[in-house]
Structures are given as C-alpha cells and as structure tokens.
Amino acid sequence: MEMPTSPLHMKDSPVTFRRSARGRAVAAGAALLALSLLSGCIESIDPGKAGVLWTISGGTDLKTIYREGVQVIAPWNTLYIYDLRTQESRLSLHVLSVSGLAIDMDTSVLYKVQGNSLPTLQENVGPDYYHVLVAPYVMSEARKIVGRFTPSQIYSSQRETIERLIRDGLKEKLRNYPITIEGFLIRDVRLPRIIRVAIERKLTEEQNYQRMEYVLDVARKEAQKRRIEAEGIEAFQKIVQSNLTRSYLTWKGIEATEKIAKSPNAKIIIIGSGKNGLPVILNADPNRAGQ
Image (cartoon, rainbow, N blue to C red; front, side, top):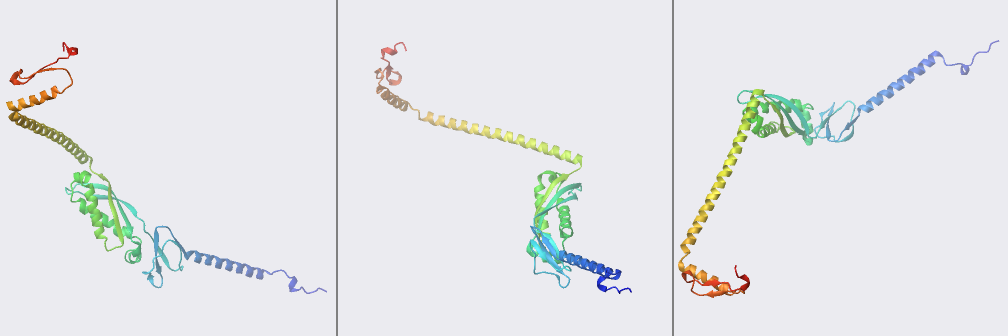
C-alpha cells in the first residue's frame, strides 16, 4: 500500500517558483525606482555658481538663492544653476563705417551675473540670458558706434574710444537687469586689403612727418638758445666796457701790485716806471735767470 506524500516533503511547485521570481523582480524594480528618485533629489552646485528653485506648486522661488554644495530637492522640482563668475564671450561682427565700408571685427564681451538678483533674472529672462539680452545688445551697440567713425580711426587711432563707447552703451541698455558688463574688447579689425594698405601708408607718412617736425623743433630751440646766449654775452661786454675807465684800471693794477709785493718770491718793484704809471716788476731770483 502506498503512503500519501507529505507536503513537507514536496518540492516547490512551478506556481510557487513563479510567484517567488515575480516578488524578487518587483522588489528590484522598487529599489531601482527609489534609487532613481533619490538621485533626482540631489543637486551639486560647483564653486562660483548659485541656483534658483522652481517648484511645481509655487513656481520660481523668489526668496531663496541656493549656494555652493549639495542641495536636496524634490524630484518633481527643478533647480536652475547660474555661473556667477566673470565670463567672456567672443563675437564676430559685420559692421559699416561712417563711409559705408564693410568691416569685420572680432570682439569679446566680459560680463557677470549679480548673484543677489538671480530669482529676478530667472523669472524675467531665464538661463539663456546671454543669447536673449547680451549678444543682441552687443551687435546693436557695435553697429551704432562704429558707424560714427572712419575706417582709419577704427583701424588705428580710435579703437579704445570705440571700445569705451560700446561698453558704456551696453551698461545703459542692461541697467534694468542683474547683468554687469565689465568690458568690451576689439581683438581684431579686418578691412579690404586695398584700404588697409592705404591706411598703413598714410600712418607711415604721418609718423615721418611727426619725426621731421620733432627734429626741426629741436633745431629751432637750439638756435633760439644760442641766440639768447649771444645776446647775453653781447650785453655783458657792453656793461663791462662801459665800466672800464682809466682810473678803474689803475686801481685794479695797484691791487695786483700789492698782492705781488706780498708774495714770498724774490722780485724788484719799480714804482711809477711802467706805462700809464703802473709799476714795473723785475724778477730778481738768480735761479730764474734766463726765464
């Protein structure tokens, strides 16, 4: 007689195995979902940057600015991150001079975002503020300012003035936005070759003219100096001649005679024997005979 098989001794049935596999799959899926949600809750803000939060319930958070470090947010919200450091953007511009000549310029604009006003920028413009505001205003101001100058001025003498005027114009255009324009630079100016050669030739001629003017100015000043010196010498001689009277010369001779008489050198002085009554001085030193 066969004995009934006990449930304790029965192996897992196929139905039980399928249920166990399905449970493990559900658990793994739940774990992956939890991990995905957790990773979506963590945002890292790098040095020099800050963030503005947008929530599904309240929109842009105008009160809180998220600074550097790890921030935890709900997965259904979005954190917009802005770079607060000075940034450089390069633009190639095609503009016209005052004479209508087409000019190509390579430029750079330096700008930065004001961190304390990030929520306002996020609400009114958004993260693409450079293409929405900065770049269009740069092109507009460059065309307006460059159009006041000649090709020669743009190519050489007035470049710094043009840079300053464009920078000031950009500051005025963006003064209602939390964007600071720190500089505008013209890195290169490209003119048609025939115009560039003509300008360079003109600049060379101007430099030669200025050099010659300098040489002539030095010569004129030197001539004037010598003329003044000659006039001074002539005036001095006139004054001296007017004061050289006979009595004055006699008196100076007497003074000289007194000094010689006090000298330790041997001598013979004959008073009144010389011309104009001045003394005659003879050297009586035998060692100086023949001198």
